[in-house]
Length: 184
Image 1 (cartoon, rainbow, N blue to C red):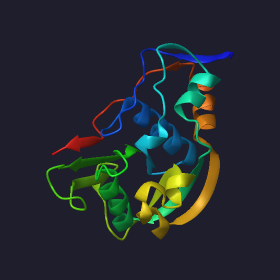
Image 2: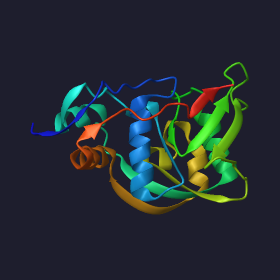
Image 3: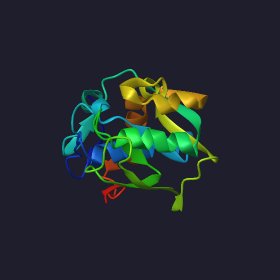
Image 4: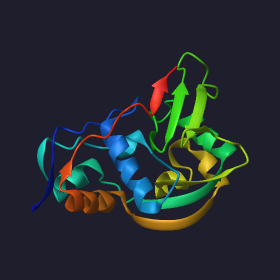
């Protein structure tokens, strides 16, 4: 296919920890929806983006599912529930933007989240956060049942389309900074 842009290095996915590809797509989701936080599932990342020229085919290899971006208003307590599930590893590690979490995999599932901050501040249970995710997770897929406690306020493009738009606009893609999901 026609080149959309290029990467400076291979942008890899990881199933059981934070990854550059997960950070890239969630950063784009968060920016495009004007959300506080974005979350997607590791299982939705199906291929790495190769180093060098990137075309639509590379992006569809990485994001083959027809998952729209959805924006959900979610109470802090439910966001905590989402992140507990994200670090349970029951469906791989959730991939995130806009938050910093520390976790301890030696603790039992359901109590692995040690700290959770959005915008550098501890999450408040009663506060409402705007969370971008994909339509599969928004409907409680992969065990992300806490999303069903929220209220969907917007629906946007497919994740693959968001990434195509982004690569076309910026031309050169670098892997985003790591350090969002940190073992305690």
